[in-house]
Length: 236
Image (cartoon, rainbow, N blue to C red):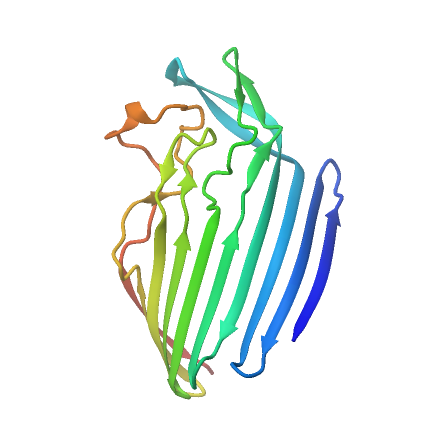
């Protein structure tokens, strides 16, 4: 069975304009007890503002803050979201996204130069995202689950001169309900023991060549290390 919906969303706050168009298709298979939703999205946001720290490429110890900085962001994307139960007590949630978020009309002037980030990809956002969440209900009170989240290549700065390789965030756990008022949860974060950095590099938005920085220390957000977490829930 197929259902199609078109969603047009326009937001008009003062000095800002946001446009989002979704074309959504929903499929349900009664035989395999599965649901699949496909969404095609075009999004545009105008007039986003922030303050930007600009470092002098000729002398990185010199910094100035430019405010306000106005720029636009636009993306075209496709998302497939599905839940499948191929056999009893097993469920698989899968989410697949393709997108291409880019800056538009993003220019900054400082130190006698113009820094133009227009048409560059937004840092810290992957063009491809894949999420797989399998779970198995051993008994009505005992569940095993995994969560795997694939992030495609990302950029670490506005000039897109630094790249992060794809990686997989990974979690796994056991949920056990002892009674209606007592539950226990055991979760392992990063059981694949991956390491690295992600997010925006500090002070790197004016760097256009990453070669001289190979082997040097830069500051960014670290991936979560392998951890084991235990939670006990008591309801009064």
